[in-house]
Image (cartoon, rainbow, N blue to C red; front, side):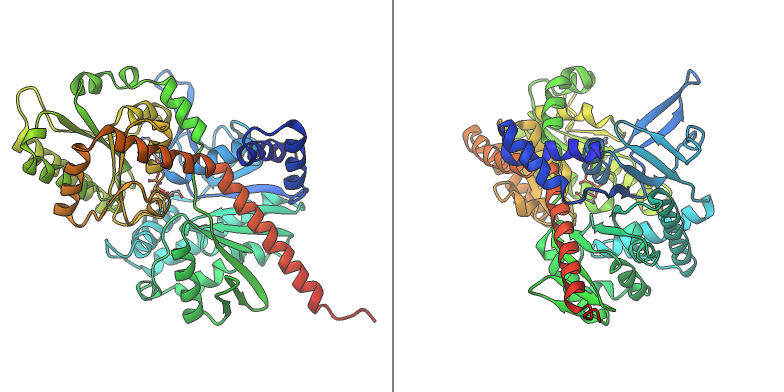
Length: 518
Ligand code: ADQ
């Protein structure tokens, strides 16, 4: 497959720096040998892009904000293959070919049609009303409704059908993404086809006691264990997962090998911290300077210190906490009033769910209060831009930001933290990062805060704003070097190597226990 080759060439470049051609060819050959005949199929609920009707009547294509898309898009662009996702745009189904797909930039998008009444219960109900808060330690109470659970099952089944059609009779490699599809690995496995299945879990896996609240846990875990490999962002999540399986599922769990064996099948469990395409962000920051993409904001900020927050408007991201930390910092440091601006970019998200609408209101109120308390005729301390932007336009703004504020209450990884480090390219800037984001494991040099501790975080923020540029540059440089060595291609290389290893070990075990031929 030529798509695989392109990806592998990129991987080889990433791993080896600037290798000579022979070394590169060898590495490509080694990696190609892993999955020579398998078709790559990536599965996520959210499609990377929607088709819609523009004002002039023509059909346009709109890409989305979101960590999963950010990470998977460059991989699929390079590898080719098929992305299977739910179609949601106005004209999504009108542009499809006879096989329900459409060609995008270097890969095929297969759209699954989920009837509206199923989608609402499956996605807004079970996936985002029950599972999302459950796995984020229930900072919003998870709500389990039996009919939504059944729709979740139905939606997983519709996806399974589409994936099996896409695979046809060819051996395939299926990369399933996230908590929307906990039942899918087993459904695919039960088809009896030759499928290598990896499930990547983008959100945290908390302690098992939290998860006991879920009435459907037995079926969900059984579904996940249909995968050959389950990947998490952090070792902590791997350990929690193994502990959950050990106590909740009839299975043999090996803590040393990081495996779960159930009904004679072994699932390997590993940590693969996800990342970003570092070059894409750096080039974007260079190509789209902030003065051009955000002229009004540029005019407002002038030469002031810019603090930036960029998130989907989600209650796990700690946006109200962030505004309070900023306000408390202003109370403590009158000398910084008039000299700093917090720009909060918030992409509206999951607006069908009450909690999300309430959050948007809460953020607006907190911003208004802060502005009321401190604004002067020529200075408004917080600028709220509640809108979705073309991601590439944001990178110039990242580069201009003196401080990036990531204050998640619980976050699998958080790619905004990584995008900031990439956009800065080692130049002076400070990442204020929640200790509850997976990214904190990789960036110990960041200014790590506990966002629940408003006073403590405000104190840290004040200290950062008054620290020397030399100190901030030093920290940024070491974070940047680590990020360059661990970008999204490094991630997919490790994940695929882990999958190959899992398949080889399973095959070796099968050979070992096969009865001798008579
Ligand atoms: P998210 O919670 O969606 O995903 P996060 O890691 O915060 O993801 O990344 C958000 C992405 O959306 C970034 O690429 C950012 O640039 C983009 N974005 C945010 N606001 C935007 C806006 N207003 N306009 C345009 N783009 C915007 C989940 C998990 C995370 C995990 C990722 C990847 O919750 O913990 O890091 O998956 O595994």
